[in-house]
Amino acid sequence: MKPKLADAGIENTVENKYMTFTTTLTANTLKIMVSLEDEKKAFEIIDAWLQKSDNI
Image (cartoon, rainbow, N blue to C red; front, side):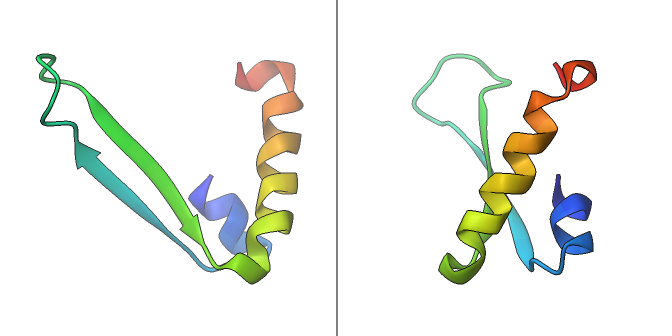
């Protein structure tokens, strides 16, 4: 998703954190951060990607 947003001119960063309060070693949270000004367009791009059946 990061490259798709960048291709649309939306600057973004990825935040990947280990969830220390769980007992599962693979529990992580992953967030894509965009500016508030780009939020609506970013959601449109993400929603369009999720609507494609081959991404599920």
